[in-house]
Amino acid sequence: MTLKIANLSKRFGEHRVLDEVSLDVEAIQSLVLIGPSGGGKTTLLRILAGLEIPDSGSLTFNGAPLAFDEATLQRHRRAVGVVFQAYNLFPHLTALRNVTLPLEKVHGHASAAAREIAMQLLRRFQLDAHADKRPAALSGGQRQRVAIARAVAIKPRVLLLDEPTSALDPEMTAEVLDMIRELRAEGLDLILVTHEMGFARVVADRVAFLAGGRIIETGETARVFGAPVSEGCRRFLATVLKY
Ligand SMILES: Nc1ncnc2c1ncn2[C@@H]1O[C@H](COP(=O)(O)OP(=O)(O)OP(=O)(O)O)[C@@H](O)[C@H]1O
Ligand SMILES: [Mg+2]
View 1: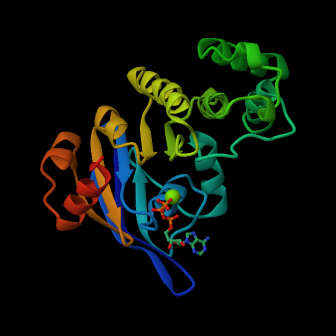
View 2: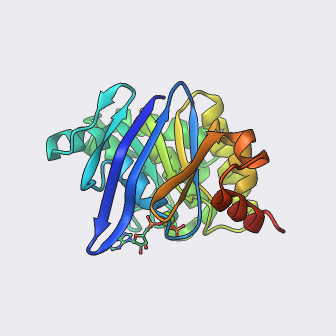
């Protein structure tokens, strides 16, 4: 993917959550956003997903500028996959229906075709035995994997993930991370916010460190983790990698 973010700012009331954020990456497959709580990672990801409109600045994804009018945003939202920390699924619908619903309602697939796409994905990720269960009857890891299956069922141009494992215990975290890694290996482009530094190291081509609404440092993954140049990033990594 190619992503150009130029001088993106966003405030909520008096609070400037993103402050002239710029980022320019080309020919990468996965970008990982790291940084302290409240730094603006979710806000930036939501803007990239077309769910939030910046106050100023511009965004170009794979060569196409994103205009922030409602019609363009709607088109953009249909073309990206989004997975959040938790509560992704409709609680009253089965796993299968959660996957088929956007295929039918948003992407216009006939119900038999939607079912076929969904079952194929659920089988592929060993979730077919759970197809008829509602989210409450699934483990946290299964729920997130269904959410990811739903996000990729539409064949998104990019998959955006905001701390998809932060509500999970280690074993479930591993099964969700395995799935993300597999999708990446298949060529899916990813933008991921995570506190799992070990995973970030494995999966990211590029890392951006976001703090106080600014991108303080960005670079190739091994370089950022091995030799961060900014004091902020160095301190953050020293803290989170301490144990
Ligand atoms: N809808 C909103 N209204 C008001 N303030 C908001 C809103 N969304 C986010 N904020 C504020 O913006 C700042 C950045 O929030 P954001 O969620 O983007 O940070 P983050 O880096 O994702 O943090 P975390 O690691 O805790 O998820 C925070 O101070 C937050 O309180
Ligand atoms: Mg967040």
